[in-house]
Structures are given as structure tokens and as C-alpha cells.
Image 1 (tube, rainbow, N blue to C red):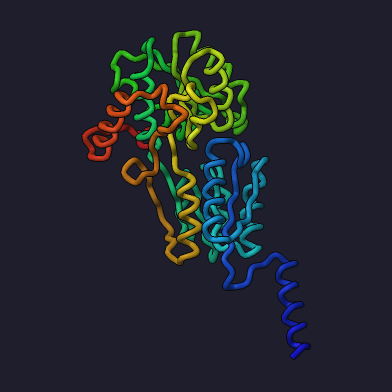
Image 2: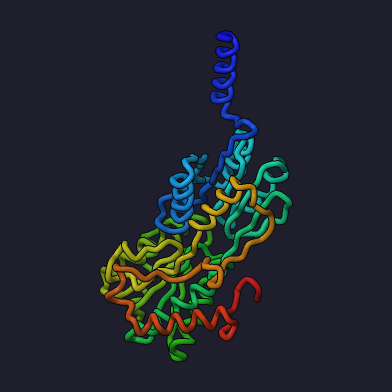
Length: 328
């Protein structure tokens, strides 16, 4: 009996050392994209969702922060080899890596955020960013004293143009005469983490008369918000609720519930209800919205909120149609 017990202990130790999961062990995993998990925006929202699952379930997760393009596929395959039950890949740029890893490990579940990969073991979660951006565009135009507002995007890609177009349509809906300035930070992944350039672009828009600027640029947005504070202007955050960064400066934040997507991915995979295919999350599904809290109560008025809520209802009902740049 003692001999059998020792054998069992040794076997368990061998599994632990090898890093390979047992058949009945649930191991979730996540691969963050460029910018780091503490970018206060997209990646950090995902991190928060993973942490919420960990806290509620008591189950830890594997994680990796990508700093080079070549690491994406390697990280996904390494996690699958270790026995991860479900792997979340953050960001459109991981599509190719997910496709290769999912084909190499057909029995592993993969979820990609912000892009569609059509494979039987891949779940694709995309958001109607244009709907949330429409509402904050309205908020910007309704709160502007100059009739001029700005947009600073990160990497110049169709996804960020999707944010920008929704923002412009919302601003024009609230004020047909509104002028909207637009700048993109760059054309490489470095555009997601360049607060210095973000600040420069925001200042140039303030110099042209804008008094509210919306940043959809990951970590680059931090520079936009600081520039707004320094200039005595207003800024709008993105993805996570960033109102707390500069109370009284942040008009609101366009919330994209990446945290919910990650948490639900882990939870459904554990429960056995995870499904491959496409999930689209907009205002109706609670996937996007805008933030109201104690940090922006002095700048986002009740009158503006009332108009935003009326527009939200009209978008959900179909009375207001917001253009999706990706489908143009």
C-alpha cells in the first residue's frame, strides 16, 4: 500500500514538472498582444476578465505578453502543448497565429478577440465598436464649446477606422455643424504604445480649436489624456473605463467589454457550453457602451446622458443606423 502511494506521488510530480495537464484538469490561458497587459486599455480589460474568473472559480490561468510578432504562434502552441483547455488570443493581429495553432491542435479550444478565424475549434468574438463610438461622439459634440472635437487613433487599420467613423457620425448627429479632426499614430504595432506621439497629436488638435479628444490607441491614449489635462480640455477614454485616470478631464470612456468576453470564455469552456463560431457584441448585448461614475459626474451632464440614452435605445431598435466601416 505504501509502495503504491509512493508511485502515485511520483507520477503526480512527473506531471507537474512536465507542465502537461491531466485529462480532467481545466487550464485556461491567455496571450496578450503588443502593449502589455497593463496598458490601461484593451489588454488590461482582458487581464481584468481573467482575474475575475480566477477570483470566482479559484482556478489560475496561463498567460503570456507578446513583445515580438514571432512570439504569437509560439506562445499559443506552447500553451496548447502544455494542455491548456481554452486559449484566448487578444487582438486582430493574432489571427494568423491562431489559425496555425488551431490546425496543429484541433482538440484545443481557441477564442480570438477582434477578428474572425473560421475553424471548428475557434470562437471569434467581435464588437460593434461603431455603436459605442457613436454615443461618445455625441457626448463630445454636445459637451464641446467650440464645435470642434478630435480623434486620435492608434495603428491605422480598418478596426480603428471603425471607431473613428462611428465617432464622427455620433458627433454629426448631435451637431450637424461639428468639425472633427482625425489623426492616426502610425502604421506599425508601435502605434499602440507611444504616449509621446499621442500627446503631440492631441495638442495639435487642441491648437486647431478642438476641446474634446477621443483616443482609440491603447497605451498611446495615456499621452492624449495627459495633454488634455495640461491644456484644460476634455478627453474620452477607450476599451476600459479610464475615467479615473484624470477625474474631471475624462468626459467619459467608450467601454468595450473585453473583460466580460474573456471571463465568459473561460467560464463557458469550464462548464462545457463553449461554442465555436462568431459572437458579435454591440449595445444590445451590453458589449459596448460609455462610462458614468464619480470621476466624470462633474463634466458629463444629466442632460447629455439623457440624449445618449435616447440614442442608445434608437440604435438598438434600428431607428438609428450606425455605419460599420468594415462592411463599407
